[in-house]
Image 1 (cartoon, helix red, strand yellow):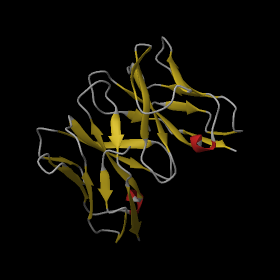
Image 2: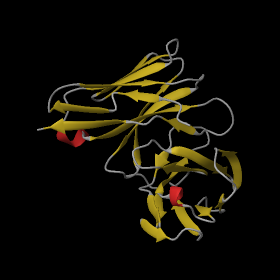
Image 3: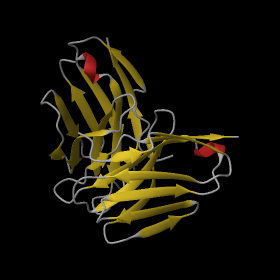
Length: 112
Length: 112
């Protein structure tokens, strides 16, 4: 079963606008990661935030984590057509193997 | 582009048959994880291999099995294929002390 839920399921914006995606999860985590997937191909790692961090930046990406609310958000600023993809949050659990538990993703479309 | 490769790219099998999917991990990574991604869903963890031993398993039946070789490449075997096994199968490699995983492009399996 999926651990997290992304919101919204789909998002369509104009090029240059900012895109915000949210993720909620259910259990205690060690870290939370965001991945991008283009057209049903492999996933690309974007950014990782540890459970003791609240905010992290990487280029045009900004991720926040609120462990009390079990939620995270991904902000993409100044969007570009190449940002069109599906975005997934994935939680890294504490026990056992470093398996990732993914949400169902947000489909982001950037309109020129 | 990650250094993770998968073969074949696409595969069509008949219900009841067996299939083997292959994955070569990124240089320096000795941990390989396999995920199943049904259409419109997030990836689901199948199992992970570390130093040729299974190191954690998701909620998949025993007809899903795997191997890891001394060069850290890996195979996923699925016996007695069912229609619901149709999915994108993703392999990811990682460093044992890191949380990020690096995904291959996937194998699209269709069971008819």
